[in-house]
Length: 152
Image (cartoon, rainbow, N blue to C red; front, top):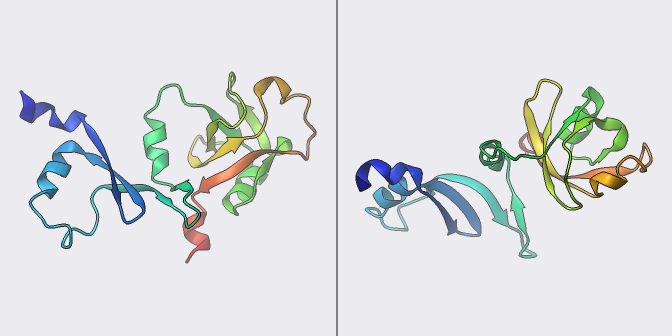
């Protein structure tokens, strides 16, 4: 019974200021190797900066997609370009946005084709969203798929 159900448990592991996500069965198998010989285990979903702040990385989006109560934003073509360049989004870049979110919530950013391009933090409550100006920055870029291109 235990052997067949091990795949349902997940483990978060801290290694060299990075957080890795893996299944429990993979974690148990990795105990056969010494820590020096083990480079990494699982998917790196985030890291701690020099200022000891936690920064999520793009593989974290795959974990967000498994959540059914996911808050998301659909952006227009211009908003997609702006976001992938690492900039923040204003009201004019948003097409559709989830309801019932509060300030500082994490939202998944999708393009017109519902492909996830990153995630960000909303600066206003849903009730105050309509009162905001067109050029006012509403969504802070926390991570996007363009990061890999910019760092090459």
